[in-house]
Length: 217
Image (tube, rainbow, N blue to C red; front, side, top):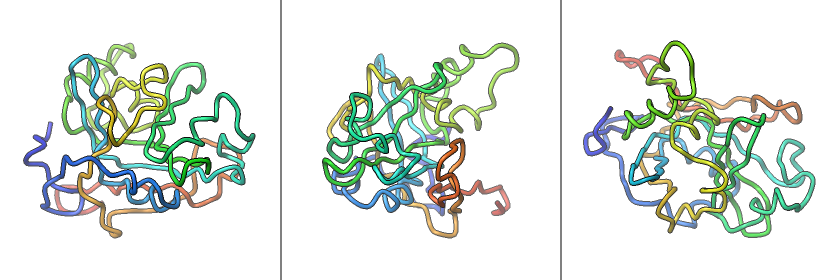
């Protein structure tokens, strides 16, 4: 585990900031927010335990005109959270097994969000291990893979819909996104979205490149 006070940014030797991102961060175009979330810190506190990780993968879902966005069907009981204030959490259930967490973007009434697809563990590693290993049979999960998918990270972080859907990421106490250190363009690659069947060719997935000890990727 990397101590938060000594953690370097994905791009260099800058320290990670634990200040919460402001509401104005989310009140922007969804693509901009998705890109800018890389290098930021997802934090969840549950049962007195706090876990943190550097956001390493995101996808943008743009609104009612985006066939892959839940808002494509309009405002329903399920999608109402997408129409909420920017900087709130939209958490939904998939495959009858996993939760996925999103940050709502743009002005209230304009449904869109960023799916947080992957996180690199930072603090609370032991608790992440317990949560993930308790859901698996056989070999344990490697630390780098504890939260490298949207369902995995929600298990590792203890995020679920009943507890966190609609949570305020700015002023709340249980689920927040901290400033961390913005990722440099050289450390980011952009691809088509994955795991969907509609508009899957749209280049709306941002990934933080993994750096090796010798500086390679």
